[in-house]
Length: 335
Image (tube, rainbow, N blue to C red; front, side):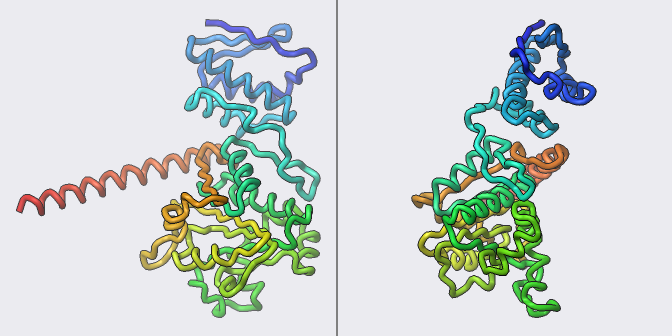
């Protein structure tokens, strides 16, 4: 089968094809088709199903070039995945909205539908839980929204916190002052802030007490008014810590709780406060749970494959355990 797609006059074909046609070669290899450019039109050759999918992918990539002016491997693989698994992607869901502008003046936009839904939930709710694997932008987008709220004077300060699980919250055993003790645990939050504000800008905000970075243990007994609060690595909170944190939120504040329930590091078999919150809070108004998946990973494409492999392994392990439990139950019932 062969199908032809006309390109608009003036369209940036070079951006679509990429350096040494690398973008088009990736589509060809992934979908087992051949794509060529003939007099301002794309010609797709292959079997019927592959050509149909390739056409949908190319439509997405063409709109992406028009919207963002650049293509990268992550965007191409995301388009291919969405077409293969969901029959396409609604580009209107992504839109052209700029979430924030970083310290270098680069606009930040949602790169996946999952990220767009996450950002929309933050705009529409006081408390948002962002749950998903590493690399999906949970913390980065939360930091971006916090900085934009501070710049717009919607809040008077940003508070960044994280459970210091490795030290059992006993930070007094580490050398240095409070900042020195906390820094190793909050490095991912610092990284996001540095990118959004620059190192000097971040330091200025900290000096004015407009940005506060503290371990979760130091939130107890406080009421946090007119603040944008981010709790990172929430899967490592205990049930008591999660309740304590959520009840700190005061008037005029917003809170984002991020975590990955597949990476719980709590000692002694303690239950995760994030898992418990999913069960208890799912039907409360003005509070939203957003779930990101491996499809929303915006790191190296290999990260998606690693996450999928671990998820498959965990599912198989749970099935084996369930089978053992069922055999044990049946054996006891037969006695």
